[in-house]
Amino acid sequence: MRHEDPLPPPAARRARGEARRPIGRRAALGLGAALGVPALLGACGALPGPRPREAGEPVRVPYARASARQFGHLHLPPGTGEDRTRPLLPVVVVVHGGGWSSGSHLTGTTDISRDLASHGAAVWNIEYRGDSGFGSWPRTYEDVAAAVDFVPLLGAFAPFRPDVGSVHVTGNSAGGSLAAWVASRTALPAGAPGARVRQRVHSCVPLCGVYDLALAYREGDRYVRSLLGGTPEERPLEYRLASPAAHVPTGIPVTVLHGREDDVVPVRQAETYARAARRAGDPVELVLMDGVGHGGWTDLGSPVWEASRAAILGHLRR
Image 1 (cartoon, rainbow, N blue to C red):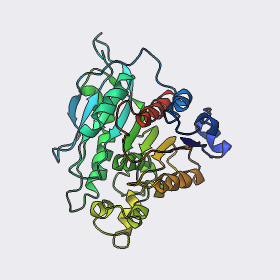
Image 2: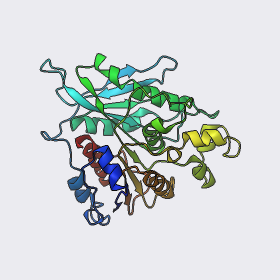
Image 3: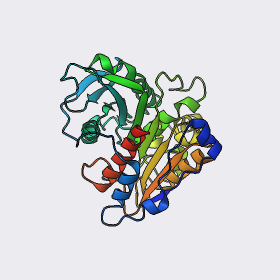
């Protein structure tokens, strides 16, 4: 694993009130026996408290009514509400991948949602309308935005209070692209899908995501043309609005994780996003993993998920 230090100007860090120290290159040296995860775990840390316990069954919550797919599963830490209190909890929004397709579902991120909840966070694992072969822009993006904006209302469905000042987003593959897009909503032009932000997010950890959709099309991505209803030449505005790399700075810390051997989403996507965000002054951390492809990011017990979890929980502590 190689970790590239963020390069925002010191003045920008001071303006954001950031006192944290980025993980250095020496703290994440090579994949090794366990992908160098102990170094990343030690640097990012985890939420304080007892050892994680298994979380219970999630609560199914609709966030809109236009489609049966506009719902999410809310996972809470074990024992939440048993003492008749309503604890204030940070919220992690999880966005599943699957090529933005209607054939993909939030069940793909159920395990990692339970895992994150067992470490002390409320986890909002969201479903959305995907592409069924006719293009899903802007429905997919509007759904994800609506689900994030619904976070302040989640306390009406379960015995906790969502900490609206500590809302974080993550996702894998297409979900990583959508998570980074959520982080960029404040930089979208007025009138664009998702530009009206009701709930801000405070960190983003996209996993093996797509950040420049025109670049993805040129490199042979078989999903983006269907998603956006045409080529970059035919739909230039849609490609730009859907690309997180085109909407920086986000003003929040972002940790991008990607495998160097990813043959589905080339590592150039992560590098392109990190370069654009850094130039704009964002505190971006780029973690590139040697020997890692496009799989394993949602597999509990895998070193790549352990590294991802450490990065997500690390943001919750800052």
